[in-house]
Image (tube, rainbow, N blue to C red; front, side):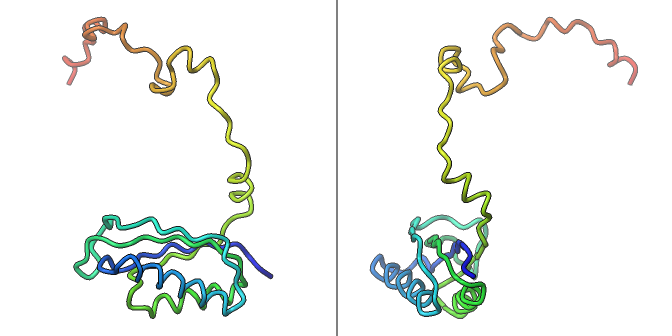
Length: 145
């Protein structure tokens, strides 16, 4: 049974652009060799890491969506762990509901919200009527402390 997966992986930042292409192609070919089908691959480029990995502060992020059996997906994950150019990899099984919602058309913002200008303020509404907040009066609870 084939299942939809997504793997996000981080490559070493010192790879050249053509080397990044070679690595992503090699990873995709490895999956195809195990019976997987590539849906799409996207290289997001070099980004700063949330934390250092082996004294490295940046990495080249890539995302690949594919369909395969569970065994092929786990083999891909194992092979990526052995690859010295892959610093980290995260494999997730895509939820059917999330895939359906992703394919559904996005609702457009209402014309009424655009007329009122609520679009940038969110649900907080107009706050200009509060002035310097002197309308609170003496709360009295300060003396009770």
